[in-house]
Length: 381
Image (cartoon, rainbow, N blue to C red):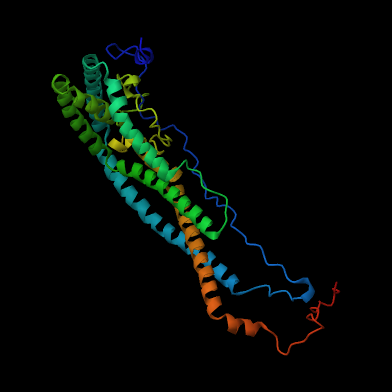
C-alpha cells in the first residue's frame, strides 16, 4: 500500500462522520490586540571631559527641550485628528446596519438557510460522484495546485517575516524601521477588521448572490465530471466548497453534510484564525483569500450584537493602536530631521557658534581653567 492510501484509505465514495468546519457561534472570546511596545532607543555615549581642564557643566536645558515638547504635542494632535473621524464612522456604520437589519429579516433568513441546506446536500452528492470518478483528486491538488499556493506563502513570508520586530537598536534609523514595521503591522490588523465589518453591510444580498452563483456552479461541475474532470476538481474544492462553507450557519444551528477531509489539503497554508464575536478576524489563508471574507448565516436577532461587538472589541482598539503607531513613527521621523539639521547647520555655523561659546575675557589658572564656582552649600572637590 502506498503512502497516499495509508494516509487517506477512503477516497470519498463513502460517508464520513467528521464534518467540515463552519463559522463559529457569536459566543467567542476576542483576542487581545498586540500593543505598541517600542524598544529603548539607541543612546550614544557622551564624550568624557578632559579631567585636567575643570570644564564647566553644560547648561541644563537647550533648544531641544522645546523641540521635544513640540514632538509630544504633534503626536497628541495626530491621535486627536484620527479620533475626530470615529464618531462620523460610527454614525455611518449605524445607518448601514439599520438598513441591513431591515432587509435581513427572519423570513429572509429562513429562505436563505433552506436554500443553503438544499445546496449542501447537492454539494455532498456532487463530491461523492466526483471523488469516485477521480479518486486521485487530492493528489491532483497537492501536486499541481498546492505548490502555487506554497510559492505565494513563501513569498509572503519573505515580505512579512515571522511577525517579530527587531529590538536591537544601533541608530535612530533602526528605531524608525521598527516603527515603520509596527505601523505596517497595525495597519494590516486594522484593514482586516475593517474588511470584516464591510462584508456585513449587506449580508442578505451578499449571501443570496453567493447561493445563486453556487447553484449554477453545482450544475456546471456536475456536467464537467465526465467531460472536464480537472476543471471540476478545481471548481469544486477551491471555489464551490470554500464559498459554501464560508456562508454556512454555525454548526450549532445547521450542520453540513460535507466531510472535513474534503477541505484538508495544501496544509502548509495555515493562516492564523482568530474568531471574535463570530467572524474570523485573523490572518486568512491564501485559499481563503481566493474567495475573500464573507458574511454567513446568523440569526437576524444576533446581527446588531455581532456588529457592536466587532466595533467595540476590535475596530475601535485597532484604530486607536494604528493612530498611536502612526504618531510615534512621525515623531521619530521628526527627530531624524532634527539631527540631520543639527549636523548641517552645525557645520555651516560652526565658527560663529564656537567663538560665541568661548568666554571673554579669558581667565586661566596655569594651564587649566579656574574651577567652576560652587553653590554656597557645596565645596569644591
